Image 1 (tube, helix red, strand yellow):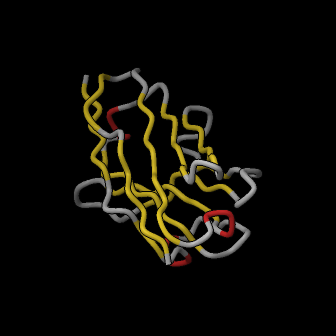
Image 2: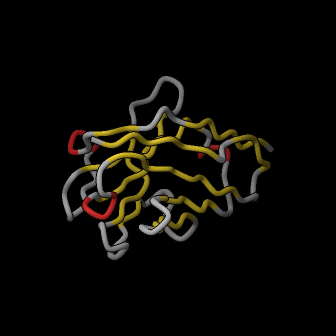
Image 3: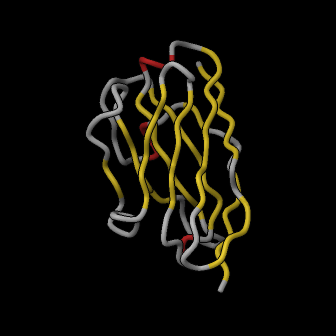
Amino acid sequence: QVQLVESGGGSVQVGGSMRLSCSIVGDSFNSYAMGWFRQAPGKEREFVATITWTGSSPIYADSVKGRFTISRDNAKRMAYLQMNSLKSEDTAVYYCASRRKLVHTISPYDYESWGQGTQVTVSS
């Protein structure tokens, strides 16, 4: 079992950039696929991006493709979500999640551990 702690959220204007970080504490981070999800008020949690334990083969939601980049640094036990060209519809609480599998998935039900979430607000 691992503990996840997100940071880097806040407020930004439309068109701006922000990087979210996820610190992983606990078991061997190298064995986990990582994902980012988000939840806007009144909406269900939705998939944003995921990456394998090697840092390869990222998958993105269509809504963020070309604007967001997921990455990880296994030596630092960190995962990141770089968000560029932010839109108002990106406003949500963002969560990082881990699953103790080498391969990744876009379903939130396949992830065992979750961070507490960090608020991202994009305003015009």
